[in-house]
Amino acid sequence: MVKWVLPLVFTIIAYFLVYFLDIHNWLDKTFFKERKRVDDYIRTQLTTPCREISCARANKGISRDEEKKLMDLFYTFIPSNDTERERAFSYWGDYFTTVNLSAISILAFIGALVAAAFDWSRVAHPVFIIILVFALLLNFVRIKSRKRLLYPAQAQTTRILSANSNELKVNLPKYRAQCKECPL
Image (cartoon, rainbow, N blue to C red):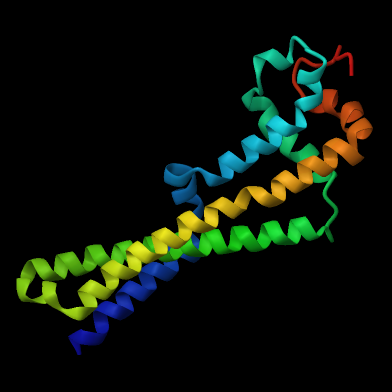
């Protein structure tokens, strides 16, 4: 009877962490910071016209007040049926899946360590080794998948800066703080 209780409890905890607490978002914000890296890239690219004209405001960088506004501006240029948008969703889905699985496998590894603390003969058990290898493998896959996260953002911002440059220049002062007298 005890043999099935621990996996059941672990499954319930994993489900709770993933679906109710969005553990993947917390882990990314706290440790991996991939969403911030991609968002910072997008914001930097969108403010390229400001830097090109040597605007004094551009030299101050992007303020915290502007971060969400600039992301809103970015999404005004991305149509809902855009293939790069679909590719981005796919890549982010892959990334967050590996983050969830990595977190769960690390928790399983910690659980296996706790179980082994009561009986060290279990350390050599194949399941213990499989959990460790699985945790390491998933972290490798997460690292590999994070490299692809920037590709859609690069394509989208390049398209915005070339095809929608004039519209971007018109709208950019509205989304930047203290940029009302912008020469754009």
